[in-house]
Image (cartoon, rainbow, N blue to C red; front, side, top):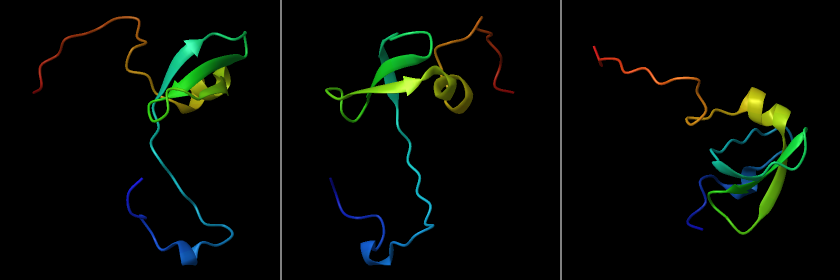
Length: 72
């Protein structure tokens, strides 16, 4: 797992933490939820609300069209 990123003895109520996680959809469970796996652990499936996917996550693979533009 590596070395700690912060001093664990300083953890306290109200502390904020963040991480970047990538998920791959494995099953469209129902109208409200999807089953996903994390890029860190492909054996463990999670169920995530479609609302969370649509409103809180980004996707680089779901667009109506692709536009090529110059970098300048």
